[in-house]
Image 1 (cartoon, rainbow, N blue to C red):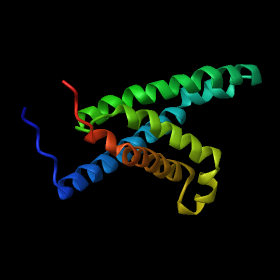
Image 2 (image 1 turned 90 degrees about the vertical axis):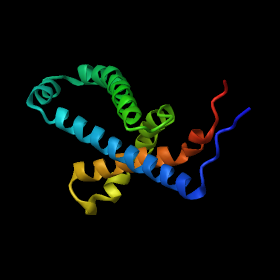
Image 3 (image 1 turned 60 degrees about the vertical axis):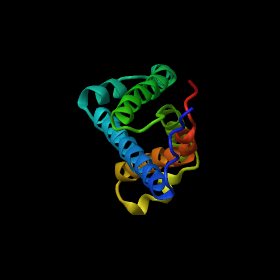
Amino acid sequence: MTDTPRPTSNRLALKVFLRVVVSAAVGAALLLGWVAAFQSEKLRSILDSTDLGEFVLLLLIGLPVALLVSVLLAGPVLWLLKIRPVWPIVLLGPVVMGLVQYFKLPDELAWMGGKWTVQAILAGASYGLAALLTAPAMLRKKKS
């Protein structure tokens, strides 16, 4: 039985570093894409014309759909950029971002720049942290 050689520590560190940086870039780009969609006049007019009941419905249906679309967009992009496995990152990244929002971290970091700049930085940090926390998943061998 032939085993593939384990990567050296320098090579492993580089792979983890690239995993974190690429995931952070994808997370920030994904948030900036959602910001661009949100700031479009069509979506803004739909949101402005809703009453409270419609807004709650939009929140209960729209937010999960947005998260699903985010997962479906981030997964293939990370896969094409040779980040493996992608599923821990695309599932944990939005959870970390949700925790960041829950603890009101954007308000604490408002001094860093505009609202969307801070959000993009935090989205990148969330996806990067998710990639770092799930880096051991890339070391698991595939069972044949």
